[in-house]
Image (cartoon, rainbow, N blue to C red):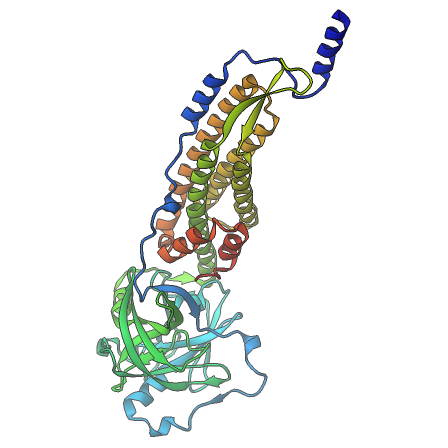
Length: 455
């Protein structure tokens, strides 16, 4: 009998997970776990703020790429222009074509000494641009006079006199329902004058927008929107998908244009603007990442709070107990979501020329994810109460470090955003991500990468 007991003891030592009871009681372990991981309030479960019916969910910029234009010789729509009154002919002649290596759009001459107004998204992220006038003159630009990513406006200047222009002091806020004329270069047609109607005026943050209905296409970005007296009402910007399901054309209206031109701004080269635009877009991307990460940190804590701790006896030795952790699957699923965000962030870390504050925010965000992912992995090796007690200390430290890193990441991101004039993540983008992430991480990843998938 004594030999059998010794043999069973040796066997218990060889089989993993079969160990003697721990020195700490199970009740003490449960109490410590509940203290470290109280059930948090998950913000995503709270009712989301409702959007106004005319809030913009998605913007489709109206520039056109070279490969979207047929190789046929481009023609200008002269046929109907002769029949228009003088004010509309003046606006037609004041429109220019903005050509970059990536796409082309339109602009409008606003002074006799060569100042041209266009959309920021046309000239952002490109190494240079050319301006073509109606007479066929082409000017190569290396600098920009002023720009605003928030207003989506840019001011250019060509080294020539421009006797035909639209004076901004004549600009008006066109009343709802009034007819409009829009000049641009859609598709294979250049200097096309289209007709439209004012739908509404709408404020999106600091930008006043004019929603209008018109048959325009890609190539109209930056072109003038004028009334029947030839007065500037807006600059064409995008096709806007609204919260009520409708689509309208949207332009930056005259009120925002005047505010933009009255603000001080130093000239910048296209090379400098390219670097700035890259940082601006990365800041917006990281802003969306942090919104999702904030939700998933709370979900991770909720999953940890749902973990149950119990003991089970060995099938071989009735006196041998091992620890059993329940609901670990929920914790693992949250870690998989964090891994998804981490893989997206890995792609960003390869981007060269980032602002130091932005790079610091990116590293701190990655560190926060790594702390939570690594801490979760340590739960797999737990089999006794003593081991769990040690693991809990590690988890508590990892969680504290993760929250600290996340706080520093937000601070660096906010500092970078202020210097780059970026707006906070759009409410509708946050709504989309909040609605999407409980179902599948892949959809969130697709949304983050492409900006698509907005309901």
